[in-house]
Figure 1 (cartoon, rainbow, N blue to C red):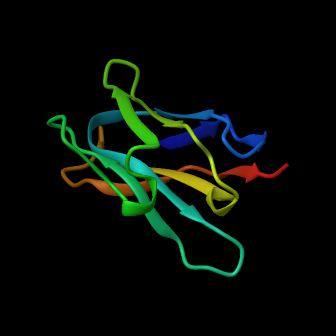
Figure 2 (figure 1 turned 120 degrees about the vertical axis):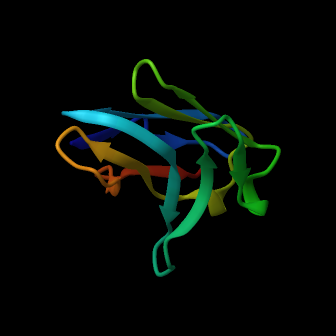
Length: 120
């Protein structure tokens, strides 16, 4: 099982980016999916979590600007980021709680990280 993230890059303040993260492999079921970020010199923080049942939860710093979504048929989670600010600059990591096909338990899996830089 692996997660592959994409969509990062350089964007000006006020701009938008969309991150994607697809899970692949021998998957029995995917539970929560979401995004964390880690800025230089800071701890990794939760950005958004999307529950399997459809609910979402966002960090206060991104509420109203970021929107998470997931396509369960494609095992993919997205993060639409609007009105980006320089303080959003970070490496963004996707994660998913996944039960592999050959296991009775679920485990957290992480994508490789994608860099988002907000700068003029």
